[in-house]
Image 1: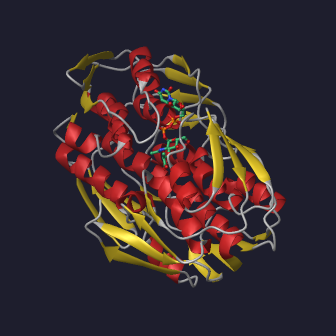
Image 2: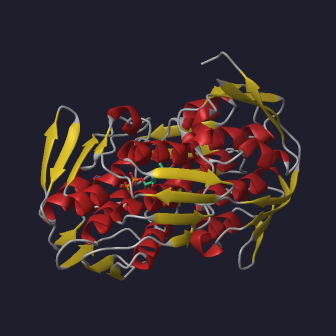
Length: 420
Ligand code: EPZ
């Protein structure tokens, strides 16, 4: 077990490179199950979640390797169609194998994902989507069992915009017989990247990046090479670090157009940002202005940036209202931020953050990926030493985070710890 030990107060400056998008990789990898052969996916991040997905796909019979950022996937040997609880419980995105296995092999047995650190995260839209495509879906002692001789295209309208359900249904529909129209589809860049990947494999998809996807099923798909998109949440986390602890930080290898909502909020908070084709430079404000945000599906303010925004507002010169409309109780980071001296009150799905003069270092505990990020951000500006326990949460979604922050001048190190 490891913890991060952070000495707060050093001003951050310099350049930091963003890695490939975790939430795109976790969709691209299972999509490779749709065709037999060798795939090369560049700009793949070296993350615990990518490793978990690799292990899952290897239990199905695929061969996966990652050298540097180039991931090679060989799906010729896929012969098992069951995703076990032991792996699925570690990562909910494992459910992404359901659509591809069903479409290519007509059978999938995937463990129900189980709980999550925050909130119920149902998968009903995934299952209803598969049924609408003609699959027979049953639940059998904690497992989803889906069967279909041949999926047939259908009209599917999601009553909630769902990244995962859109991705899963899209991956099932590309080999279905006939046309599928997905209404209220997710617009997230990770879903567009998945669609681009499927099109490169020979799929026929119209409407990527809009809320209506039209998919003409084809008989078969072929392997391809692809370059993953940059991680907009990692990039956004570094921009918030710049607003809190900068100096001036240049975030490289990112896609600014994926972060327009965050960029405009950071400008409202008083930061000065300059945007180029693949980088964003941020200059910290002298005083952080309070800015209300309400999370919403892309292109709105991302729920995956909500915890980081609360950390920023904890040092603002006033009070800000943060409304979480995607996951009503995604606030496990708040009690830990309060331990660092933040003044935050949560009522239902709304956090009221009253800025304080200073945060004070303390021992705090990560509860989930983005909560950990908010604690590290707070520790960077807190007086004295902050220890963030359970760093395995960070390693799920941030590649070598302490090295990248040290490269910006932060005093942070990963230390062995028997504290759990
Ligand atoms: C994806 O999760 C991301 N994960 C999450 O990022 C992100 O927070 C989330 O999208 C929202 O943007 C990956 O891409 C691997 P959803 P997903 O289905 O697909 C409800 C991170 O930190 N819903 O878009 O599981 C659901 O309860 C992670 O990187 C249903 O009701 O999210 C939520 O309220 C955390 N039924 C809303 O939809 C369903 O069948 C959006 O969830 C599915 C979802």
